[in-house]
Length: 377
Image (tube, rainbow, N blue to C red; front, side, top):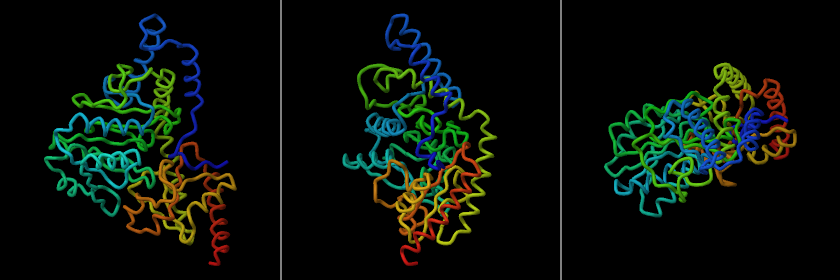
């Protein structure tokens, strides 16, 4: 099997799974219970939260653990809007966002909020002058992904945060789901930052929203204090501990892992550019883990299934995207509907080997010839 869909989800690190199993068995108490078993669980919960906070260089009371990045994004956006609803009804975002952001802001439009989309430069970066021009006294939230999930475009969120310091009434939310573990992150100029466990070789069902001190939110899940007052529910202790373990491990030997990925990325890009009918959509402003390309005249779903027959697994868009829709991200970058309708995404990892990449390229070329011949091209 050649797995090239790491941006959709990563396999669980066996060490992370061991932690989950051990905590599930050794810590039966509810961390909110006042008896000895509960206090033992609470101690581990607090230690796990502290480890996550230390890795991200934030405070423990700024960590809100959720069921995943989608919940974290919803809490960041809806929680901000509900808390600061008297500040204005203007939201700024981009066409590069994950559906858990784009659909949430569209939902808010039905309540009278105005959503504006920031212009992109040719390399996919946000036009900072356009950002400055679109900020108004009514702007309450700016929500931007640090790394786009389909093409891999990386935004300079620190610079954007510096700009937004001049607008203290504006809350800055960053979706870091595709950034954490892939690049080193700095949350200095960010108010709210969300990411997920299953993108960093952790388990599904756990995510995080970093909420800086001084920022308030209205919870979207009510029912009393849990790990934090901002998210009710029985503390998911085994997930918390395994999440902390996954975050620590993904940044262990990071530079070596990253160098391996860059080497594979460069080889893959060079080889893709040699193949007729292929247009590479990712550019120099993209992280090396994500490579997006389009194949002229071949539907992405057709190629996806053809590769699956050879035990090769890539994706057409993000796993949460609507079926049979073009890629909004590719369209926003390329302004080309044909490329947006035929885009494919490869996402690699430090676990990916050169042999896997070579096998993928061999099969890809075979399938392009085969499918083009079937169409009479």
